[in-house]
Length: 291
Ligand code: CUA
Image (cartoon, helix red, strand yellow):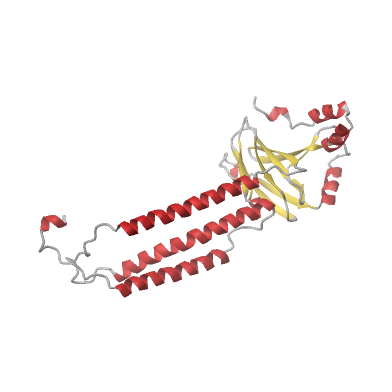
């Protein structure tokens, strides 16, 4: 369009003085610094109750420090520009100074974000790997989601009828690594423990899992994080992280008498064939597998 008007066409605004650009930069940098401080002051997360949660929170704080200042810088520069360079009366026919291409600028604004995103992706992948590493002495918990309730079974601990203990409130001993084996009976749910910062889909026909090591006593919400029907919002329960001795009491009140896969594995070291039989009998409920 500019070409059709020829050389003596649209009059141009005067070039932006250097001090204005410096002021723009200064405002952006100050705003970014405020953004970092706010990023740390805002309590984004509920209390963390697992080893993995601390690793994940650190990742989130790194993401906040990396992204909030960029957001604040961009927004403050945009707002300042809209105010400083707005059209005033009598400037209706003025146009900006013609600019075409700036290789240096384009290389910088492509290379810097690419490097930043690549670094964050690698860091996140390392965190994702670390929180999933198998821990020694893991306790398996079978989690089953169905409209609209969670149930938990403790396959290592059987009651007087030799059935795994089953609860609707999840009890875990502190500092004992847990692997959750997650199942769904009807539709897709998501087993989400905000205090662990972890969630995994519960999908009919397959078993999904995640690992967590509770490290803080107390009660924490467990929620379903996938719209799974009319009762979705009511599909919540409680996680209680208790001491090791309180956990033994919990097992005893649910009929656990000491016959567990742990005892079986002790027998196995002496070579007893019965241990292997007991181990098979203690496997997670096969009904919950595919078909
Ligand atoms: Cu189950 Cu939402």
